[in-house]
Length: 178
Image (cartoon, rainbow, N blue to C red):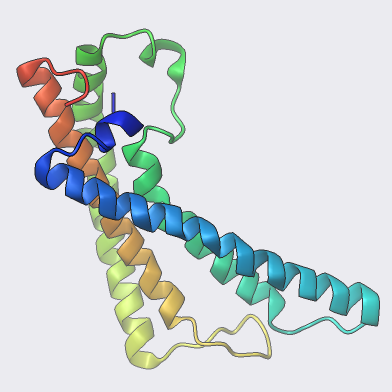
């Protein structure tokens, strides 16, 4: 099973990829600061001065959404994603690796790859047309946010592949933290 220790074990290319994904995932957590500032400004403007902003809702969606999606690869590499652990935690590392490999091939990759392609197409069209939001009178550009989506899904795909390689190593070599 992948954990923090095996991410930091310093092994070649996989470790280098881990460090990049970890840095992006941890850095995305700092988006909570501007998110909180936007919310505080909105609450003060709305309830303190009776003058709600036209931009706070969309900015909070952009910051919160970006923070969430940029952390997906990081969460996956550390096995912090949602799963039913009733049986999984009781299995041997080899059994877990078998389940991980099969699920990645049958479920995760067949869903993730087409989603990534669709998100890329959507982001590219948004970027070319300089799409703006229609959710408020502010009409803020949304194409930078839409570009974050396929980028984060690509990071998740790389995370899935790294974890898949490690699980294959467990199956071949029997290394519990390969």
